[in-house]
Image 1 (cartoon, each protein chain N blue to C red):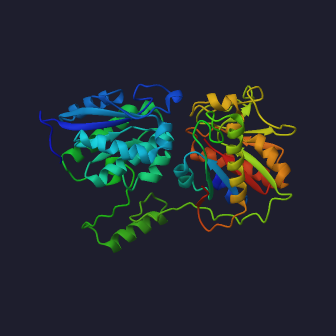
Image 2: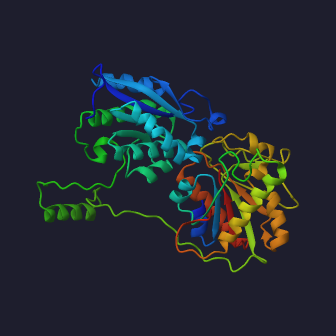
Image 3: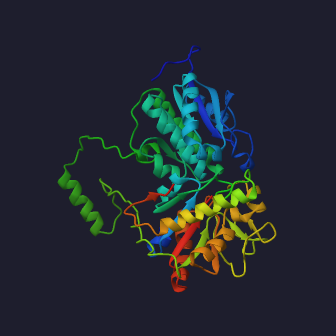
Length: 76
Length: 356
């Protein structure tokens, strides 16, 4: 989906748990997430810290969208 | 090939995920690796079919690992468990079949690809759309299976056929003959017909509209050039899209928990966050306990709102969701194309896509 939306002309930042799958399917801006059952969170953290983790991931995705790249890039 | 075990049998180590290893379903996908003595689950069929093929084998151990645990800890699992597999002195390692289970396929491919350079033959099986095929077909022998477990016997039969050849050190035939995916290996051989005759024959078939098969398929790399970077965020419309199955509570569009045939479009207007009463996950491919408790863990509505105020971008008032679980590549492409048409029409300039 990342690739097809990008093909249509819209840049996509893909926040995902399994980077290798994202690379295989052809996403260009890839942001590694926390874990499969909770990519943008971590139930083991107190709520405040958990939200901070999520905030940082979304900020990373927003930064990725503002970064010029020539090829598939993992923003870790 | 390798040394036959003391009682004269070929030694096989079998790799399974938590489901086929008998631990449990998605809720156990974080299960750490462990070893079972002897065959387990599909291992029994594997042993039986090997023996029917007159190969005296014994599954000496079954290594089991949760799909999520493997995916999230691939490096350490391989580092710790490849030596464990080697200690069993296998003549052959069989992984799966993984069918269309993405994480499982990636695990099977990684294990086989790591063992081959160590001189341990390995065989696995997957459905053609499993991401493990693209990732590992060059470094692992992967036979083609159906997309669901209903193709178990056929997949195991193919693995056994190839496995026996590998045990006996026999030559592996063409991918078509073996029923496996191309590894990109070219072998020279003497053809009865000279090239000019084959070329003319092929051309005549092509002109006549008859089926023909190229002798040298052009590799197809479907990549999309990265779009230029956004010049900034102020005033830019950004949409959230997810394959993690976050839908309004009750799943109004009945998006399927696996092999989704549709996507949904849902309003974000007036939403500051999502919680257990407003949204849920329709996804059947991961344990949804944590996400149902707090859907922001897949669809980050809460921080999207905060960052909107701080950075000045405009969240698109709709988000799009589907379930990326055994969903066919064709369907995923179709969904994305339809979504993209709407996004462009609505002036969306960037997308954050979240996946589990």
